[in-house]
Image (tube, rainbow, N blue to C red; front, side):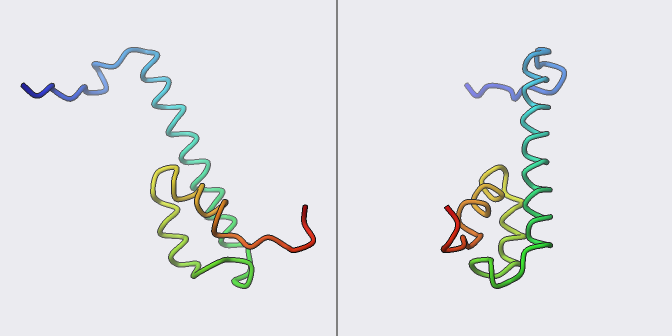
Length: 78
């Protein structure tokens, strides 16, 4: 038998706090990725900005992928 999904009311205070913290981290990553995309020249981004913008809206993975794989590193940087 399938379990009924929990609603916000059914969550404990700790679970609600964890959900809020996770949401805050996700939103912060999204904003940071969007700002970086806006300020970074096209030549320093691997691929198209529009695709990275769209990908950054995918929970956690999109912004993290952009920061790890989407930006070019300078050869002189450590």
